[in-house]
Image 1 (tube, rainbow, N blue to C red):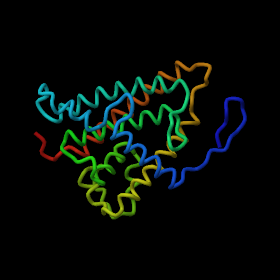
Image 2 (cartoon, helix red, strand yellow):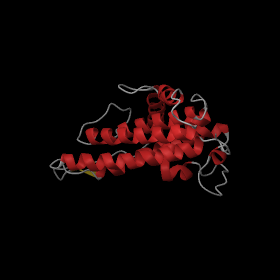
Image 3 (cartoon, rainbow, N blue to C red):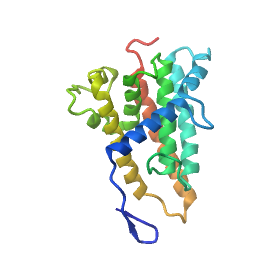
Length: 223
C-alpha cells in the first residue's frame, strides 16, 4: 500500500514472476542493445578498446565506470523531477533509467574483458551486478558455495539450467526495491532537492554496480 500526496492510499501490486521476467528481458534487451540517445553496450566497449591511451583493460574499465557514473547522476536528476518511462512494468522513471544505464555499463565492462554478451551466464552476471546486496539471495538453493564475496568462480557453480530462475529472482528483487523506493519520494513542493538527492544516490549505486561488474568479469590474471 502506498500513500499519495493528498493523503489517500492506493494499492501497490506485489511483484510477480511474470512482471519480473518482463523487467529482466527489457533491461537486457535495451541495456545491452542500446536506447536513444545511448549506443549499445558493444559500441560503448569498442570506444574504449580502440583508445590506445589506456595501458590496460583495468584502466579502460575504471574510466568507463567514472564516465557512466556521471551520466547516471544527470539522468537521476532529470528523471527524478517526475514522470515515468515507458517500461513493461510500473517502475519510477529515475530508477528505470538508472537500471538501463547500469546494465549497459556492466555489459560494456564484460565486452572489454572479452566476454560474449550473447552467453546466458554472462547476461546473468550482468543482472547480478545490478542486484547488489541481494545477489546472494538470488542464488540460494542452487548448491553455490559462498566462501567469500560474489565472484566469477562462484557464479560458475550455478547449473546452466538454473540461470533462468536466478534471472527471475533478480527481477523480483529489483521490483521489490523499486516499490520501496517509490514510497520514499520527496514532496513535489521541492522537486529540485529531490532531483539532486536522487541523482547523487543513483551515481553512488552506479559506481557500486561498476565495481561489482569489474570483479565478476575481470580475468584472474589481467594484463
